[in-house]
Image 1 (tube, one colour):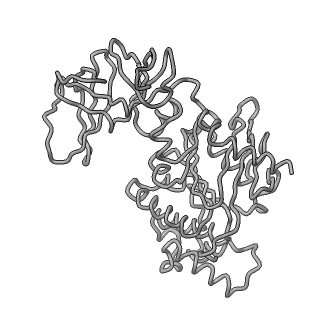
Image 2 (cartoon, helix red, strand yellow; image 1 turned 30 degrees about the vertical axis):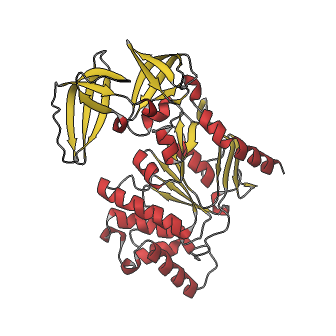
Image 3 (tube, helix red, strand yellow; image 1 turned 30 degrees about the horizontal axis):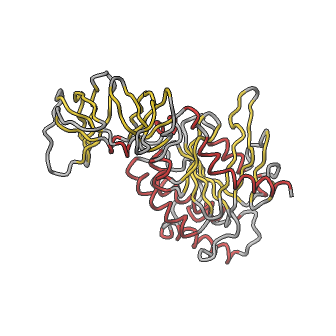
Length: 388
């Protein structure tokens, strides 16, 4: 395994990819372009089609329509063992009667390598996952995190151009997951392999992915960098699934002289400077809890709504507040516990500020629009490659 150069290729393209089980459409004609060396995450709730998509890339499922291209070659009908990809599952699938080194060596069972080369590659693979000192142990002598490292080493020893990971950290405790998230991203950068990572854990995707796709009901709703998708959600589904959001029903009535969208929430008028500011009629407006400001009752100014604190939850670095607006809508806020102290108590009347630069207008038509914008050019290229 030449870590410095990394494996050649690793370009994954999905062209109008679909999978049907009887009358159920698990994946509904998705298009994706994942360039070589990218850490890409498929994110979404259970049943959204993300694992089915991964299995079609791996070759474990045959598409009902569309194509899977690896380095420009259509491999939709190519069996798994003839694709230069490997898969790491949530269940480690280690052989209990074999040592760590023997489990990793098992990945080379069909490779034509000498015993000396195999020993060298096993040592290098174990070194990559920081398990070189534990090669003689059996799986039952390892922690969950160590067993997952062995599974990674076994997958990496074959030098795949694409590594597929199906919720590999799902069985670990929260603290260990956070540690391995950072280690896994560092490992991917070191080996230079394309990683396609499936998860329903938003923090995992935000922490590790270069780009991510949010899926819902077999479709991709948005593709972009973690920052783009978090701060600029293209739909209410994306905003609601990725992180904590405040989604308010509103009426868009026009724009002001600065181009900001005027929206009415109940009897109050707010201004929003992001999203579909040209929208008219029923819309949703979204604001993240960390952008909400909570001040003493009676504070005046733009984009303010009166309310009462219903709940305060201490969460270490932050406190989470739930404020019920006078119109009955709950708003979640996050306040930093920076030592300055807080005069807020449960039942306190407050003035909630939703800054216009933090308020984003969402329309029902936005679902999927970001995917089209991000993927249109790359998908056109993929289609042309598939036809040639």
